[in-house]
Length: 231
Image (cartoon, rainbow, N blue to C red; front, side):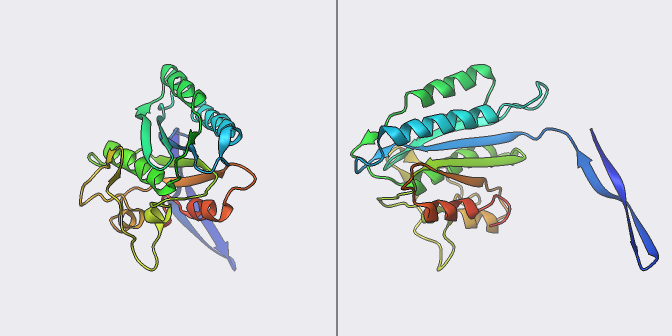
């Protein structure tokens, strides 16, 4: 149901009314959600305990994406894992019950990858690449795009998170891909966060969930402070 309301303001005995000033809607908005899950165990300190927490949180988030009403649009969901490289386990696809079961099963068997570093920026670029490749060409982005990063925030190799979001003192050297292949490339549709903002392109809301009592909350807070609409 959608509609509008008139707005009436009164000050010092003088009133003014603006017709149809407020619009409302209870129409369900479509969601595109990307889960970005750390798997690295570069120092032996990540381990199964943190991985178990990531699996639990990821499954809870997945359940929250399910619309409350059957008539609501199905969400697009993707699953990305990363250590020193990021890879897309499941690309953006609408999530009926069968797809949800597949994603849950994939999450359920994730284990730490011993001996590898942590490249958080790689995971963020992989997520942005998937969103851009899916929705930029036809400019048919869903109303909400969210990237959920689950990590302890301890970046240990090149391509830290700042390669995606840093603005000052200037754009970083921007990667074009990783060991698992090149990312979406279009000069008019960059992946770098602030370049997308300058071109008025859709950016996802970024939510970073710290895993473990030793999580680098400063790094994760920098990521979470970014919003899809307010760079």
